[in-house]
Length: 293
Length: 342
Image (cartoon, rainbow over all chains, first blue to last red; front, side, top):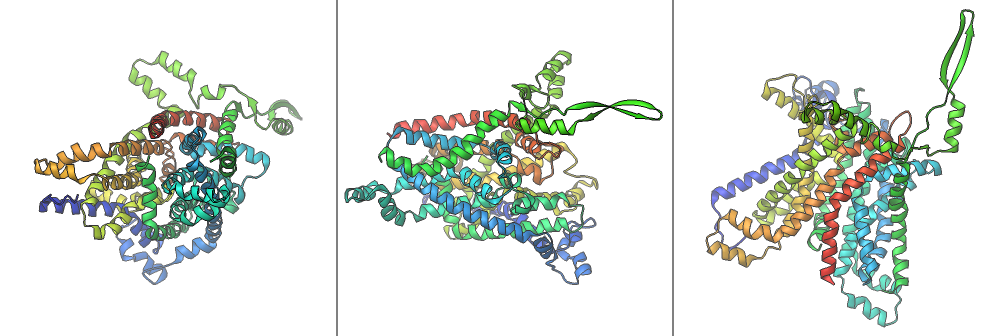
């Protein structure tokens, strides 16, 4: 801690640095290792003989003639139809983010500007809804969806993910709109704007920082979801995460485990790049709920 | 905001939540009182030159007819809740009668599917939550002492385990601890036991999943604690340094009391998240040795022969009850804050 007066001893500094280095190694090494291994053949990454083969690429050299191979990637993306899964993920993610931001900004704005008791109760209900395990909701969906014959298709999953995401978005945007001064829209109302006009012309131009944060979280939820997509989509419409799981089911087959490895890397990479650019917004979003209550 | 405009602003979000969160909970509740139909059996008399045999076969036509008429299944009341796969009331009372000691009784009850899952879920919560708080706090303290210039990349590295989905995170670790992976192979060498496998032993598997849980959730605790540390006032800290307080004393008497509300918040959130542990069990292929409540529901829903809606719904309702017990303090806290803010 930077207390100015505090004289830090050297031994403390060193042990602190060592701790951070070890923690970062624990946090990041698994990803680096998987990324490295995804360019090897299975016999190297899961080596029966010696794990060191994963570094020296012993079998990869024999099987492909080079130290690195993109076989796992081409296998998963084309033969394993991972391109289809990633296309589905893009559709689901974009739709979920845009719809849930549209609903969320309207709802949260109303909640933040209402002084009535029911606004508070709605927030409490949203909090309860947020705590529901997704799998329990899915067990409620399956039967009606089968009966209505809307199971297995992308639109159903998109609407479900939007709804599941709504409580968190509402809370996040609610605490953001609370920081936007009320005087801003009050003056617009006095000038004769309707509530919707106020929202459209006064609030929308200033709400982007909050919307970006909320959008990032809906994006991460839609992109990362396993429970809903695995159970509500049919094989054909699977998104990336359930697709990865489906490669595992057949891992007796020689190539498929490496397919899973390469698709894990393909699915994680865009997320990491995104977080690299938007780290500040993600952290502010996570703390907004905690610090402001 | 007048009620009318509020209604129209909130309608889309409210409708989405009612239709896809509120109704499903009610639907789960209704389903839990029904069970799938029994198959209709008919006796068929088959005669061949050696004599006649009466055999019992499933009448497919009649069975599917009943299913079409009542797709929800037959009404079962609380039958599903107390059957062997859930609360197992009969079995538990039977064990109570025949067991010689309490230990024996607990052992037998612990082997029933629902209690087995409950024990794992609670063990996971009890071990992971405190470790997450502690590790998150230590990382936050020690990152806070590092020069501001290089903190950005360090924070990025720290939050990586949190942003990947649990399935991917657990898979990445699983491949490393595999007997043919880097950690698994080295453990075998270290222990000098070529047959050592984390997958084969129940205890080792539980420990692995718990370690995974700490790895995955600590970054969240870190982020919140780190932000809270930025708001700790400097004057009392400086005063305590002049008074000769040690580093540990400063943390204990000034920093911790200041961030105490945040600690309870993180504890409750991570308790709730841990209670619904599910994906790591799939990722680690640990179904054999570790089952959680959420996994039981998933297993019923992907059942190959017939989806056990009633059974899944009953477990769901009991999970929701568990979550509500954990949630109660959060709600009370929010209520108090709301009252004081007004």
